Image 1 (cartoon, chains in turn green, blue):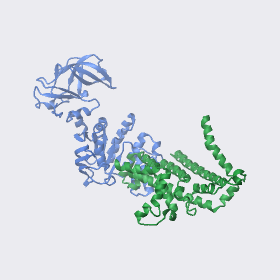
Image 2 (spheres, each protein chain N blue to C red; image 1 turned 45 degrees about the vertical axis):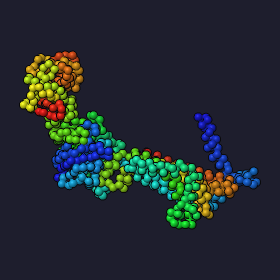
Image 3 (cartoon, each protein chain N blue to C red; image 1 turned 135 degrees about the vertical axis):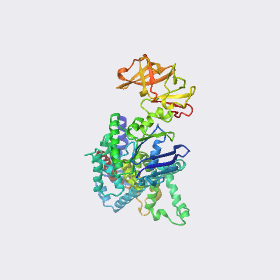
Image 4 (tube, each protein chain N blue to C red; image 1 turned 30 degrees about the vertical axis):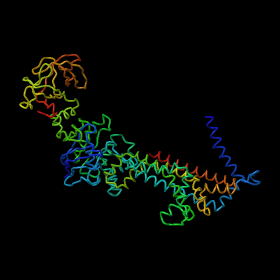
Amino acid sequence: MAPALALIGLFLIFPALWTVYLGMTDYRLTGLAAADPTVVGLENYTSILGDPGFWRSLRLTLVFVLASGVLGQTLLGFSIAWALRRLSGPVKSVVETLVLAAWVVPSSVGAFLWLALLDRRAGTLNALLGTEGTAWLIEHPMAGIVVFNIWVGTAFSMLLFSSALNGVPPSQMESARMAGATAWQQLRDVVLPNIRAHILTNTLLITLWTFNTFTPYLLTAGGPNDESAILPVYIYRTAIPGGQLGMGAAISLIMLLINLVIALASMRVGRERRRRS
Amino acid sequence: MSTITTRGLVKEYPGGVRGVDGFDVTIEDGEFFALLGPSGCGKTTLLRSIAGLEAITEGTLHIGDRDVTNAQPGERGVAMVFQDYALFPHMDVADNIAYPLKIRKVPRTQRRQRADEVGAGLALHGLSERRPGQLSGGQQQRVALARAVATQPEVLLLDEPLSNLDARLRLEARTFLKVLQRDLKVTTVFVTHDQAEALALADRIAVMQSGRLQQLGAPHEVFQRPVNTFVASFIGSNPMNLVTTTVTQAGVRLGDGAVRLPETAAGLVAPGDEVVWGARPEYLRWSVERLDDAVEARVEVVENLGASVLLTATVGDHRLQVVVPEEDAPAAGARGWVQANARRSLLFDPRTTELIG
């Protein structure tokens, strides 16, 4: 126990507390305040909450999480799992391998692939669509990182839902078929109620991961004009290029709190569900 | 009218394996019909083909006057109770029973009312708000039955209806099923591997092996005049004694002696013919004194069946099983005489395994 606690303390609790402390200083990357930061209390927080940039970033993050995580990855992952359910043999393995490849490719490599695909001059997409000269990541930066993140993360939902669908008793599906239920009615009345717990787990994990992902920075660097600066990117740009480490720490703490709220809320929903059944 | 008629019905799986291989049967309106056979004989495949859950490869299937060979499961007027009951765990009892009505867009209040009605007829009073997980096995089965009959189907299919119940409940449920079927007068087909269940419930039994029909008949026909040695050994709580031997002037050779020639085989065999002699343990008589046309035997094992005992005795090189009333039970090692009932024993052809008489 003791060594484990020491490690947790060293690598989790201490950095968290250090972030709390930093968030209340004017610590900077360079200059006077870097050598001798002073405690400024809640000043960082008041200035963050009064900064339209922060609110905009929070709004972008929300859109990003909803569009790419909750909607995109969940729906696409479920659809692929549902479609693969009846397939077998080579088609199934090919699709699974392709989807999994997107997940296991290192994010820097994945980002490079997407840059090559979306490039203005020599991009594959422009060649395919005949839209020579379209700068996708400048014209549609949010759409760009949303699609990219769906591509990266769908494999997880697909795997999770595949195993969830395997757990749905075939006789229940057949009972619904005997009653004359259409495919949609079978999905609504038998499949979804049977995999509710999996949907909840999937949503929680995907929300947290998407909320915290920094990889979209590799595509758009938050630009143009902060149009794709989701919170992790916003923090990075505040703290490192911007040099305001204290301010960055303060925003990080706010993110940590949001994470906590998401996790607690979904655990509560899960408990509620178990209690009722 | 809801007879079920299959003509040359074949279900072939990819790879050429035939689950059902050319099945012809007409199941009468209101009949309680059993598909009986060992595991893998195709009985469940046939039931699922009638349900529409398996696509029929060849042949036709009619329900009443309608050709439903290629109809969707929901369009056949067929309801099915699955072996595991397949109740929806997230719906209460009333919603489970009324699910087929929901698909038919019956308004909710009417649905609940119908569910209560059907539930009451199946001894489910006061359980309509419960979830399936809160019910006993017998109650779950009755909910599944209620869901199946709520829409008044033309045909009711039951897949191993009693196999998920414990032994005691099974007998109770068996009687319940028989009464329910008689009251509803719905054409009912059920699948079972338990011959006792088939004998007890069915008006007629189809005995199957390897996807093919072996024998079709009323329980007493299948029990007393099995058409071949497979049916003979499959039917009956204690398997039929089957002895490969020869016909003699005195009857049928058994050890050093002979038993009487079965009455129905008289004139169909001649002395010297090789035959398989078959007699059910219940139709053999045990005696400590010498009887006419009896063979001498030595008791090897005595198994108590409650009101009777099952003897395993050796006659020459053969083993015979005999059911004896409990008060006449001999001890292991005792010697005595076995007499066969000529009206209740049969001869089979050892090459074709088919009944001679």
